[in-house]
Length: 60
Image (tube, rainbow, N blue to C red):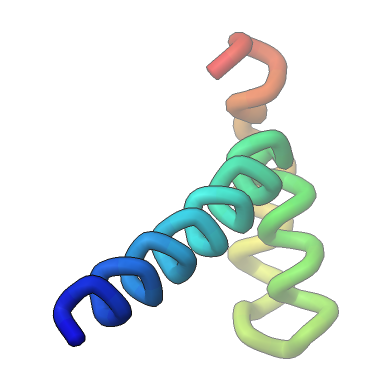
């Protein structure tokens, strides 16, 4: 029983790590733009972040 739970937990962890890797490749500007398109943030925040140097430019 606990072996099945452990296996399911590991599969979930692997799935979330893959999602995180995909998101971490995007720079902040891309993430803010996507959130704005989905109406999760305001245009003011998008403008503010687009004027700041993105994380991609400094290689993080």
